[in-house]
Length: 93
Image 1: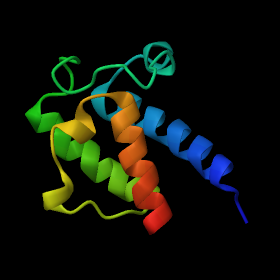
Image 2: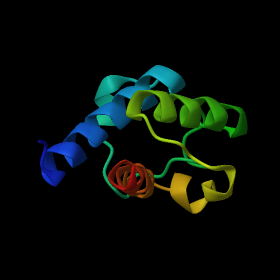
Image 3: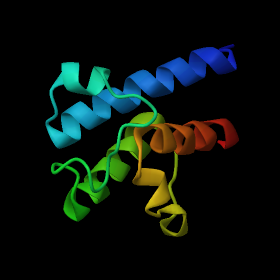
Image 4: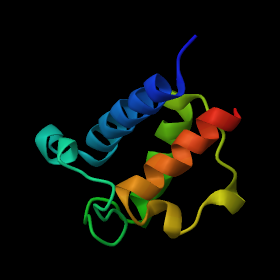
């Protein structure tokens, strides 16, 4: 059984891969993201059209469901906020 720390690390790795794949971002750039790195409104690649693709890919790769009423600007504001949201969804199931 995976520990919470292992799941958190896996979530971080997968989320970074998704950002590279969906937004076409350079891996080195994404590897440098910190919890305070701005996403929506800061990355030109992450526009309103890209959000749907990003969320769909997150759902598919991490086997979670993101309800429409859970999507807000705060969850996409920073990398840390998105990671926390996704991590919580994985814990809850």
